[in-house]
Image (tube, rainbow, N blue to C red; front, top):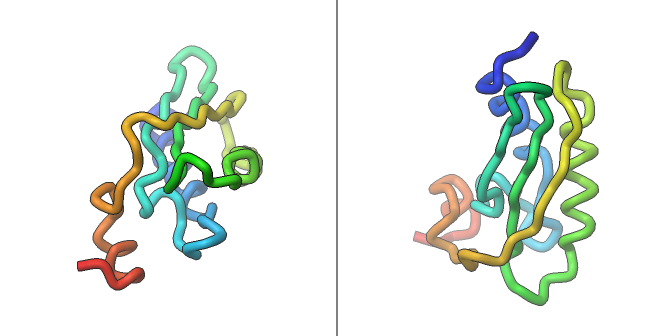
Length: 105
């Protein structure tokens, strides 16, 4: 059985395949993923994520894509998501790779 650390690594890899449709960069490098919680007892996973702006309409789409991207991970339990708006997202949360791709220094 996979460890919680191995499952978290696999979830991160899966989240790197989920792109923000407006920016074309994955949600993990954009800093939209706030937390990944793995339950040690049953390997259920909760992904807390945010949006670039409060009024952004892609929340439900990202929810579906996160679940689709993670469903094939071996040994994973149920995946749930929670969209959170605090703390608010800002470009400072972006990975250097994402900043570079968007021309932000």
